[in-house]
Amino acid sequence: MKQYLQRLIAGETLSRQDTHDILVGITRESYPSEQIAALLMALQTRGATVEEMLGFRDGLLETGKHIDLSDYNTVDIVGTGGDGKNTFNISTCASFVVAGAGYKVSKHGNGASTSVSGASNVLMGHGVKFTDSSDKLRRSLDEAGFCYFHAPLFANGMKFVGPVRKALAVPTCFNMLGPLINPCSPRNSLHGTATQAQLRLYANIHQQIGDNYGVVTSYDGYDEISLTSGFKFVTRHFEKVYTPIEMGLSYTKPEEIYGGSTAEEAMRIFDDVLENKATRAQKEVVIANAACAISLMEPNLPISETVATARESLETGRALQSLKKFIEINS
Image (cartoon, rainbow, N blue to C red; front, side):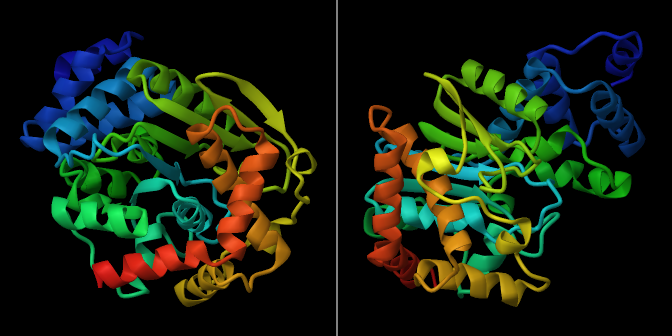
């Protein structure tokens, strides 16, 4: 580790192989926590490069548990988190809307970090028991159109950097890695980022990975499509700026998509959306995110059609049926 730190002090960057080897060394407990902390802060101060992020990703996937779903064409919908906006569980709601529309969703998630309720929290609140069983995950995909990877069951390497990250109490490059280490490496990913710089970093990482990706960021700092402003949507095929009006939707206010002050309140909003009882703003923000995910799967469809498809899934109850079937299988 000393040589890596000396290179960073000298202003050098690390290679993809370097950060892969560092991650594997961390899982083998080869380095003292002080050196790991110094490394993370050096990278955070300068900003991790695409190659450095890819190496950490390689190491986390190598030391974690992989689930082979290569015979499915799945999509993941997840934001990086850390935007400090405390929205309700928009990407999780959107995932069930996409599943209800007939697409397969393999979502990777965790408990809350900066919001009241993360994806794992809201699913646990419905009695879901997380699994790493390939058979059960496949059954969920087949019957509910949705399966869920609870990150701690798969990303074994994360637990070795957890204590250092907690002690530092500031964001590090590992905050950005979660969405990139889905255990099944899905063919399609819609990732939300909180800043334009993060969007560019993610797009460049995905170009190296070679998957069918979409990266979005709202211009007012949400790590998802918030409809509180315009947003940028970058894929392999195009880079576009949308406003809510151009999607046939309405602008929302931050307080209209707030996730509440308790996990119970966040879960009520989640349920209201999928039961088609939520406010216009809550429903439309979910429809917008689901529509962009569907656009990845259907690149030849105009956004107006994918919005209509998402709305139909939600308003006909098919999204709710996907949730209910998923809970039935996994309770």
